[in-house]
Image (cartoon, rainbow over all chains, first blue to last red; front, side, top):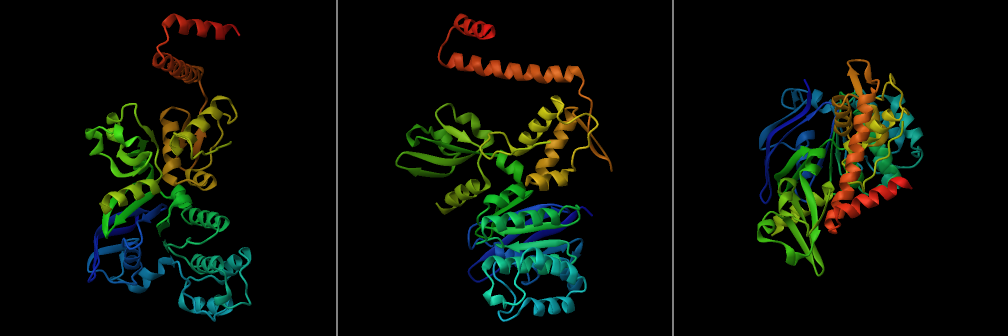
Length: 285
Length: 123
């Protein structure tokens, strides 16, 4: 069993939104970035994976097990961190510790306490008085103290300061270190997270746009800049998400079309963010 | 062992890692027989993806710089002099090609270019 997470033809039908035909696999020991604009279906997908939502169609397997086969065992394998604290506001760390210990058989009080100490989380304050960063780290502590196989992070690093984001990146890389566990995270800003992602899945309007190993994805596009007036028609129809201003344009071009560029344009290696932004622009038109 | 990743570089990250390791193997900074950090260890230390470091190592392996043995990790192979020579030759050719391209772009004559070359050799 090489695959940790298998998602097949996942669909969820809502009155005014459809998530359609999401399919991917994430091997053991790897990290996937699940990207898209707000409202593209990221959270819906992750909620279908964690089992908070039931899908209209499709199958999700974690470590070879589907939720339908054994819901308890399935949920044990997942650690979830969202962008909002899911602990009751008036709870203090001691209450959370007790509840998690009762609820999850693999919850280790020692591990939990060592995270609390390492990150200086306040034992005496109720969760509602925690800073945004502290709340996120508390969620990480509660999840990492368990024996899980898959970390599902939904916009978890939003609003964290750069030092904390770096801390989280290290945590994620440590989590997949033994090659047995995997991470899927959703975000609308990749920036530093892009660095550690092995795979990128990009959705827009509930549909798959791009899905590949990150390095392949970056190599398959060029970021092109130059004077709009100089674009020959053959090139124009290959440019994706052309953004024009008074002094020039910027767009994405599939690398295999680089021959059309000639010497008139500047081109460089794009970031995943730039690829995503230009694709979203082209979809908007 | 040092690895510095630049986001401004035109080289993809796996190629930056590959080139920097190669350089340090060639100049002896990483001696033969040395075991490199595991793919996952390196990914974590440098803060890049596992796929990226995997590719860097597998290319170093193809080029004969390291050998990966199951359970033992990746070991630096003795750099034979031919390999070393080949690498340096390649670099010289790359440098000269850039110069020639530039000369062509500005329409410089062959003689003028060889003059510059000879002058620089003398200094």
